[in-house]
Image (tube, rainbow, N blue to C red):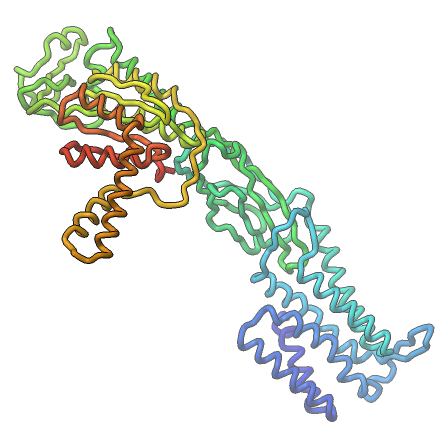
Length: 530
């Protein structure tokens, strides 16, 4: 039956080209070819205007021949007592289902516009009603009562569809069961949310969120009736909402009415990374406390899957494994724990380390990442039994410089200094920070040329480096690293933890000087962590 309604206008227009005189037959032929063109090009957005033109023009084409076919079907319009033949209007009635079909086809590709209103008419429904109202008013002024009646029928058909749709849209369109999710700040969480459409008609749905840290997979669903699943990927921040809002925008399957609903599908418990690092550090201190057994911390080495070590220097103890040598048994810990424990050895003493940390951040997010990296770096070195010194500073002064610390003292010191982070609004930079290494390379390359322009450029580079050296001379980072290097072994490796704010130029220059002297430096780029 649906196929009949689709080909019906074409059959009527072909009949009009054969039976009607000029110019009606020519108009019918043009409309037929126009509809065929849009059908072959598959342009659904033109389906609605073409169908409405069919509905309005078909009665006009056959109006002159109506008395010839069926003179009894007439209508008197009061108060003007104008007689209108009904036969042309009867011919147009089968086009009404095609209007519904065209609206459905157009709704599949219709954009859903964001709005603050809970319900509103779409652009399509407004356009159709305005067009029909304009045609009715113009036809009334021209005295064309057949076209007035045809336009009125089309308008009543659209209004009837709107009433039908509104009666099947409940006040609450979607039902969602809220989930509770615990997640570290900056971590990625991916999960699915089930929701149910309570509407009695299929809906086209578009889902989005104003939160930048929420990514929605399959944000558009067509012809939904019943249950569906929404895939969310979250990378929450400390400043983010604990109940982020998801906006559901939907239209009916004809695209006439748009509805909006805000849901909160998830309740987030965002755990600061710094708090998590502090918890790990406290747990480590409890495991390695006096009376917990010397094997507690070293047993964690076994859990991490580190292979047995061979050498001449004592490294630690672990549980006995098949294949271990009897002379490696740690009898003292074996008697204390009641289980066989063996000693591990390494070839040579481990290289000392230095943690240099800038305890200045711009906001709570940066402070959280800074403290997390600081404590976890200390914890990692402590678990590896690497002797480590700390040099901590801020934008004004050196906070503390320590000698080499053992594992437990290192973890305690990171917890203590992690509480001393201060928040300072950074100065706005309009140029990129200088690359000291590249400046020195450029200067060496320019020294080999005799071109006057190269000499002037070299002078500019030298002036820039001197200015940086002058500004860095009294900066806390330079003094802190100088002090800590005097209190540690010369071959100690530096782990630099900084947000590169106030210490940008001074830190770049100091690290370059240390690297030129043969000191290894590892820079943890906190800025790129999310």
